[in-house]
Length: 230
Ligand SMILES: *Cc1c(COP(=O)(O)O)cnc(C)c1O
Image (cartoon, rainbow, N blue to C red; front, top):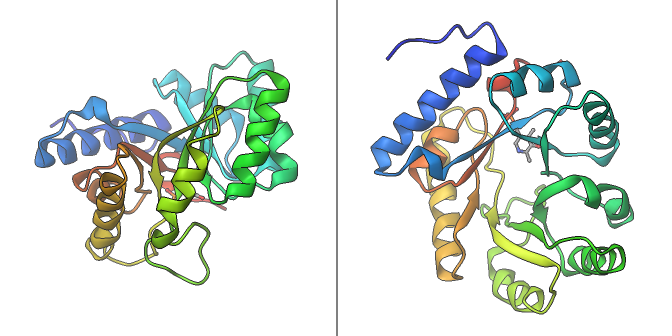
């Protein structure tokens, strides 16, 4: 395996892609099943530009206040980025954010879903791909629905034509050893499969390889790709 020059964004993308491929191989999966999202919060549009030049297409932001100026600058520079919203989305930001994103990874309430539905209906937008954020480890500090509430939420969402439930998402607890969060990823996969869902948005800089071994279809990687956040 040739090692990439990890002092550049392009080199780190190559490095991450090869770890993704190795994790897929260990799990008997195809690397094409896994989408890499570059999480650009706190990073610049120059970084987005460099990542696009290195072949990355998907980018994630967790706050509307940061997403919107970046989208504007990226589009002014004619950069073709696909934006994913990955943080808690306030209902009063739906109108601004919705036209710019290809997916929402953090659907966490029926009220938010209803706001998205009526806004998409009003403006004639396509169906929005959504991942329901689940608080698998039931941490008090975390966003996301408790696992027990998932079936009820799914049946309420089923009648909203402008939402497509692509799968589930979780943010694993921060631990020193990624192996410690394997049970969280496994629990999310089991929950998805019990509810007939295929998409799994899970895994970040420290633990994406473990997440892929446990079935992640989308990994959201910031620091490992763009460098330390200041
Ligand atoms: C910041 C963030 C990430 C990426 O985290 P890194 O540790 O920088 O890889 C992934 N998902 C969400 C929801 C985030 O807020």
